[in-house]
Length: 186
Image (tube, rainbow, N blue to C red; front, side):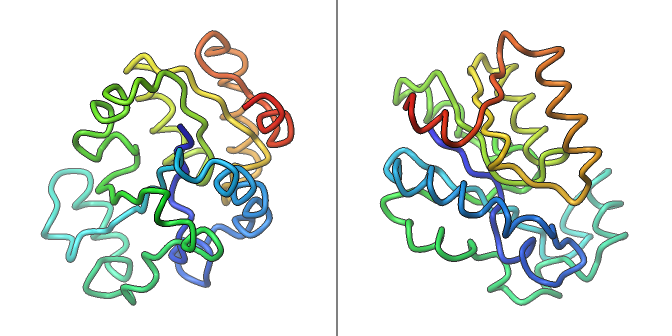
C-alpha cells in the first residue's frame, strides 16, 4: 500500500507551513500514485477549528499557530495538490488530526483486513508527519519502504538526519530506496 502523507495546498502554497521543496518531489510522488492508484491512500492534515478545540500539547501548538486553524484558513488549502487530487478516487483520502497517519482511528485495522504488510511512505514532512507515521508503522509491525526522492521537508539537515536514522537504526524494518527502484520492483 502506498501511504502518501499530507501533499496538500496548505504545505505547497505560501502559508506559514509552506514546504518549499514539495513541488520538487511531486513528480516522484505522482509517478508512484498514478501507477498504483487503487493501492494509494492520501492523508490530509486537518487542523482543528480553534486552539480550544484541542487539548494538551496540541492546544499549545495551535495557540502558537492560530492563523493555521480551521476558522482562519481557506478550506481549499486542505485539498491535495494537483495532479494528486485527480487520483481520488480510486485512490482513497483520509483526514488525520495529528502527525501520524495512524492518528486516524481504524487505519491500521483497515490495512490488516486487506492483508497489507508493507507500506510505501511518501510525502512530507520527512522529520514530522512522515517520521511519526513510520515510527508508528514499525510499532504496528508493518515493513516500510521509503523512496527518499519522494519525501520532502523544510529542513535539508533534518530530512537527511531522519533518512540516516532509518538506515542506521531501523534497517530491518525500513528500506530506503528511490522511486525508480521501487517502481521496478513493485
